[in-house]
Amino acid sequence: MTKRKLTSVFKSKVVIEALSERYSLSELAQKHQVAPTQISTWKKEFLSRASVVFDKSTSKNIESLPTDRDELLRTIGEQKVEIDFLKKSLKRLG
Image (cartoon, rainbow, N blue to C red; front, side, top):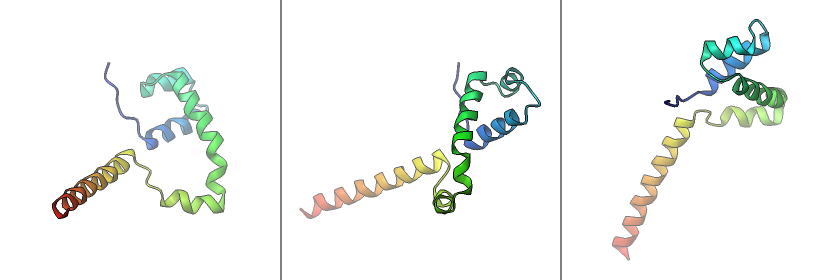
């Protein structure tokens, strides 16, 4: 079984559907091809962090944070390349 990458946008949409209670967890799980327990976990996490959205001190910080895992990995990769370049440059000088 191959694992697919589930984005935060996808998870949010599923949780919002679950909160609307139009469909059962089983129906949503089948529709989105995830386990019902996974939807419950996302729902609990979503609800536990919901109050942060309206907190003025953290909302500015949250908006400035990169939200996509791929973006974070790309940034880490770029920094690694820069660090490796600087290390090689120092070895040449020393």
